[in-house]
Image (cartoon, rainbow, N blue to C red):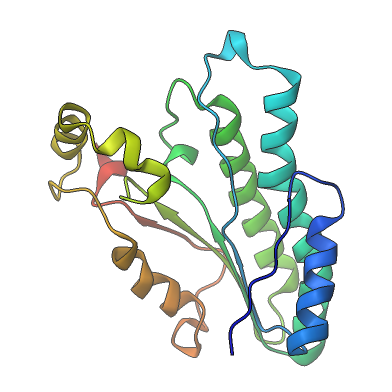
Length: 195
């Protein structure tokens, strides 16, 4: 059974509310994927309080509320997976993504911290960091043939990734097959991180 739960993660407490609603509907949660995020492209001189606060709320505060609400139950039951979706930006920040890249770096720090402190009893916490992936969020930029060609030339595998390229890695990190992977930062980027 699948069900969608609407939330505005820019609002304080929405992560906690969604976690409660999900538990009320499905019972205990064993896998938490922290995938919601927002990136606002701005030169650092132009970052406003509003855009800064919005990215911090969605990319950091809401995930923290979800972790605080769901991770204790995983620990109590002795099995759980927390998978944060990071970004190549945590290593190679775009000049106009100062805040977004910073939140992704902070998220990786959290993953490493939590992995060390909650791993006993079968709970793992990992980060999956995509490179250039063709999604709706990136469609405007990657639809431009010049931008796409420039990006493909920078990627050793020579192509833009797809959501399917991430699926296997996510399944590994969220399954028993990944039970000995903890605190990892798995880059799925076609080798962009080595260029």
